[in-house]
Image 1 (cartoon, rainbow, N blue to C red):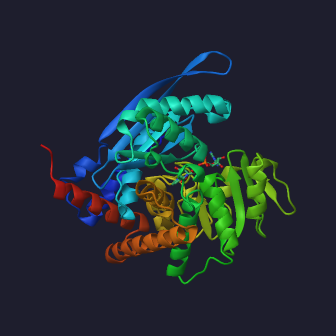
Image 2: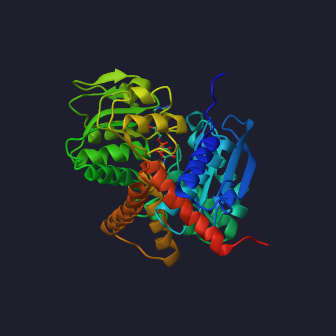
Image 3: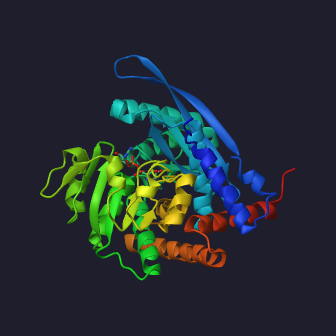
Length: 418
Ligand code: NAD
């Protein structure tokens, strides 16, 4: 019988392995294996044609032991409670590995947003915010954008929450428009962090970003910003994809031109240029390159394709793109993988900067933000590297050991209530 991928079981498997390898106390670890709270809400929405539809939404709060819960909101037809639980757990690990004072949470609605009008999406977002209002807040749980949500979604979250609380509450979410307290550098922060991670691991092997051949799966907020920033720093983008399909060009794609094309409302399958071939997403993953960057969804690099990948490095921009089975194949093949909880943490780090600016009523410059982001990631990379060197383990195990030891220690210091 085929093995059905379960993202939450996947994260538990990886955490269990890291706890054993790192010799971490298993007593308090039991708490980290379970989220603190799962909320499921039903959201009735008046559709534009006058009918009423009810959507299912979730907010999972995994841990607030190191600070307020933090994590994005995803709109996707395949989103379910199990996926949101895994995403919330990864958020706790991510905030711990880069050592920012947040816990982890995630939210989602099971919906294909491409089938809703803008006004329907606004009503759905506002109703969802109303439904989770009692458990979120600037010092409780701070949402942000994720797949198929953006600054506009956050503007609706902010406005609904602020109206319910009778005052402007800019710190209730991050990834907001600049005009509503958003931070400079936030829209591109996750992609910038992915490029910094790529640069750091290449440097570790005496290589440079310039001239490095990169393939990126997914061309949304994270994929497109990763492509543009890497392209500006001299990398050669040999393949890109979105939900419509993939494009490939061995001499390199112009990430600026393609970003503009997509911003105008096109899909990558419609893009034509000299030397560009159209391929499937499956073929894209098997393209010859130095660095493969999955930046779409979970469960993309599996035991089915891991043995055929033709890259030397994988930098996980998406959350959970690689299964635990694929991990062990990649390890045997000597493919170096930089894990999601570190590689895509640029978004939550700059979200943290946005929140700090909001609660202190401050504004920082883009240069200041980008410099602080690079400093935090460089420090976290060094922390992971020390564990990798000591244990002789993969970078994923190194990152998990750093994150879990911080979470376990925080739990131990606090003790159990009652
Ligand atoms: P997005 O909605 O902006 O973009 C998603 C992209 O993936 C789109 O281009 C879409 O067409 C493409 N896609 C969807 N299904 C695909 C498939 N089967 N094959 C190929 N492409 C496909 O989402 P995003 O914010 O860029 O998030 C992408 C990933 O990065 C997710 O795993 C998310 O959790 C993670 N992430 C996002 C942030 C952030 O700040 N937005 C931060 C950390 C991690």
